[in-house]
Image 1 (spheres, rainbow over the protein chains, first blue to last red):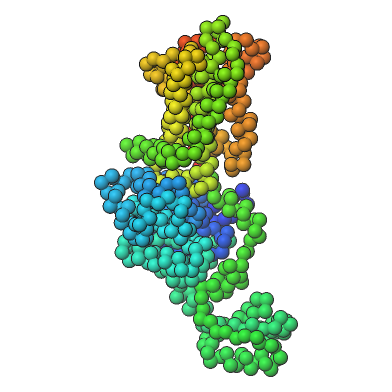
Image 2 (cartoon, rainbow over the protein chains, first blue to last red):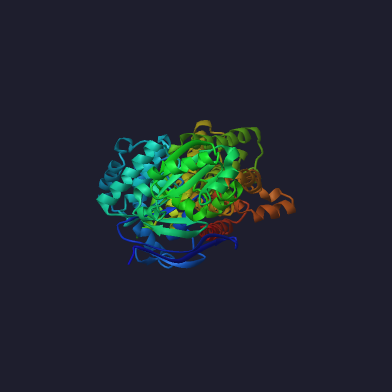
Length: 325
Length: 257
């Protein structure tokens, strides 16, 4: 039995937007499970339902064995959450934020100090314990939030876009903490992301979600292997795009980029280039790429993850609704 | 037991935030002091048939004003909590919504009490120094023993209004409107600044509808021994109003989240 079991979970907004559309999955104890998908795919809505902030329209789920609808309080006790937007009180110090959290989760006074020092140590913020959070950089705030999410020793940790808006260096830092958590604490982690590298690097299993539906679920390796090999990418002259469509019938073509799936790119690139030359297609640049999760997504949906499927306005509207309060 | 701890936690946060925002304390005291000085020294009308002077008459009114601004502000800060995200942190904790509302309300009422007490002490101070201003204000144990709990009660009711409004509003953009159309009229129509006996009939009806009137009247009775409305009635209305506002606030807050 999984630590999280989700059955036909559905959320419909305003009677017509199916933000989460009858999804099913299970998370095993001790794994890092990822939700990968573009913005507006339904990741945050799923988290909001699982952490009892939002009532599902249909279906249900159990978290740590508790029903998310009927046993909301028990669910809340066993989970820790790091939301996408900061939820710290920026007028308070780091220590005060942690203390308030500990109190809200019923942590005994005798344990409080030790736990605070411990989690601050984990995210290397001990020396800033008594600084007002307002003075923290966004990376530090994120780390503090991770620390806070851990202070009551949750069995299960939700991380909603844990590295959104962080610079690459800080992102790597946060990844290290997450891996450390899994190893040292044996915490089960559910993270959502729209960074494919993040899912690839951290997750034991990844569910790819798009338009509220899970379209693939497996280990990152299996997902990539499923594509059947490498990709050859040709950047061609824009004038030749139409021609290329006829020559490379199996390829996927985006703007002036031709993507060919092949077994072994190193061997086949020569053949491909010769073919292009013969048909007078001007190749500006040729690259070989080992498959990434982005390619998996591309293959499944015909879109890239970063490509926003929904218009900006629609996105803002959805976001506001999904925030819920 | 744990819910009590939760109420305390939410209250504690309000306290830390209050004492950290020193400018806010000062600026919220400036207004009532300004009122006391300007109106108190410019208008020299004897009230209640010459029994007390005008400064003493408006003293309770100005204290209620202080309580009003402080506690409604603190109720409406629920919107801030939402915008800054801390509300989510509280909502997802294993505590009931009711504890959050109660903690928030007690926090607001406590800050209101502190502010009100500062003004009260200030009034006593001026009275001692000048001998002329506030001569009708009684300084005795009863004005504290009854006055302070009364201030808490008034504060709680007004935080309730604030939380209720905050639960209905989406953003802080509506805050200015609330200020102009709810808080200011409630204060000006309450008889804090003028005796309601002398008002024309239609105006008096409005002041009777305004719940703040009863807060001002009961505090005025405690502080000066005079009031236009029967003191038992005004105490009862304050109590009933506070209880019902807290219920409404809890209900709306619950519904919202």
